[in-house]
Image (cartoon, rainbow, N blue to C red; front, side, top):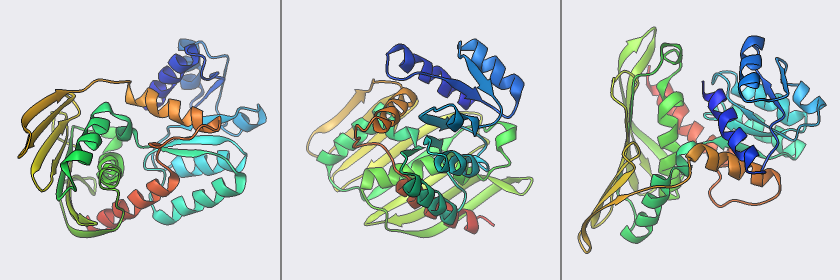
Length: 297
């Protein structure tokens, strides 16, 4: 489903003249054919290695999280620039291995931390530059996961976004896990996880619930004299400042998926970005996620 969404966004960027969408790959041939026909893409096949043999410059990788790393390594080793969905890998050492391949092959690799590109995140980060250093950050990522995703640890499926976001908002990656709580285990996998960590001088509380039948995407930040609450669903930012009083901003901007894919394409063309996450960012997030995952059991 998400792979199809990426194809849709790339097709829109193709109409803008930014990229040429050459092929769709899926190990299920009938799925590759269906998506290719829907979006009028001339090639479809089941073997990702054909991407390199056709001279295609770049690929976006949206496969189950336990296969991301293998596909990423294969394509990067063949000289293909890669956009690879989160969490990239399930262990820090695996991502370190991909970083080595990317450096040896001299390709661009960008992880898919889409929340960085949300206009709400941009507004929140701008407000934080005025409000001062974050003392406390609270992230809530709640929604019922499809059954096929419940087999994956929620820290890699949902919470990983907020781990990266906490790094991005604080500018720190020095962390210590203080506590982890889990509940509602299904087939050995906890579906509700909360984690408390120290990140630099900030305290961070991460709450992910894969069972709640209501979708919540919120971030709360407390500084020395301000309280900020961002709702990514309602696209609003509530600010309560000791000096400025209470304000609420409605936020708008480009679709985050298109924005991050645009950044990736520009980077492949040699145009830098100040917001694009790197594999080193994915590695830092993975170190936190892995420790939380180990403490879940």
